[in-house]
Image (cartoon, rainbow, N blue to C red; front, side):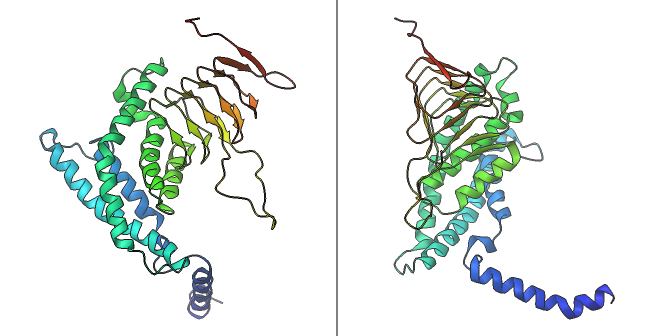
Length: 307
């Protein structure tokens, strides 16, 4: 049988079967899936064009018109983002049979709040840039860091996604974080709480879980996992959600390459150093140095210099 002949006779039936499967399981007319992930990617790209004028633009911009340039970008991206948020809310309201939610109004309010927050997000990112400059002896300038470091690219997405996550926007923050993951190899869940002056050196293979908290002036290297241990199950054998699963990292901590720190009760005390390839499922006090030793990590606590 010739391909064109087969396509004409059989393809409509296959297309119909795929349509039915998707309608029954995931994609609804009012879901963000019908808009496509690329629509979310486009919005996050536009927002970062506003945060870093020229960096994410294909063509040079007129310095004298930067204000107008940023304003035009924000106007267009705000409309697009609000529509996406509305669809995300609408889909979940439909699943919960919620007849009282004004998804349109909620989407508009959150979009406005995000735009108002952008200057603070940009200031936070500037502290991340400075942390990279002072934390990496190979860095020649802050401009180099903005243009080439995967850490800043991942954090610029995370800090926007985290804001939306905090305002209970469904789906979109995860799509944004996975977009950054694809581009940088750095996987930061939008629910994680990260302080200022955070630096991920090299970056590839870093995983930071949803309920992880990270303090200020923290530096981690490639291959670090801040994850969960095996999680408890309910009486039906399903994982219990909405519980603390990931570790807490206090201020001024350095975590070297390949270290794995697991568990919701695990806390790394401030001013500690976690060595490379350490496997850690217990808390350590402040000023600790943890080394990779067999059969368990070697923990040495040092007094602060002032003492």
